[in-house]
Length: 202
Image 1 (tube, rainbow, N blue to C red):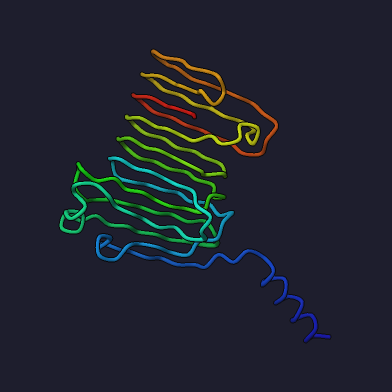
Image 2: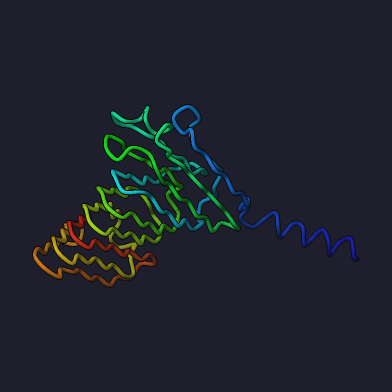
């Protein structure tokens, strides 16, 4: 009986989601592209240095970082660093350093990931992320691909100074203290905030 109970316990563990635990640091992304295993349905807290940043959802069970632009070759010598930590599907990623201009950082994640992203300044695009999304910039342009608008229970977008263009929800507002709010029957939440600049929900 004891052996049978142990077997059932092991079977239950194997049947559930598997979130490997890992802490990884990388500095030479140019010559050694960064990629780690990450099961969909997890959560990612993403902090990225200022600049051009893209976060793209894919059908792969990995998180990866790609670099492009005229200053790619300077990324290693100017100290671009990635630190990733995963604990039971609750992950943190920090990307710091590197050249200030001429570099686009693309972070690819499983599409079904709950994303929380903080970038100080820059141009940020979030595409094909199908989980909850919470994205904030001090200043710059933030574009979020909404996808199916019926999938959301709550959508909030706020710009202190600038414009909110919520074409996906047939709304557009410009000027000071502009905000947009939408309640729906879905399950996902979207929060977008920019101190000064523009938010586009497309």
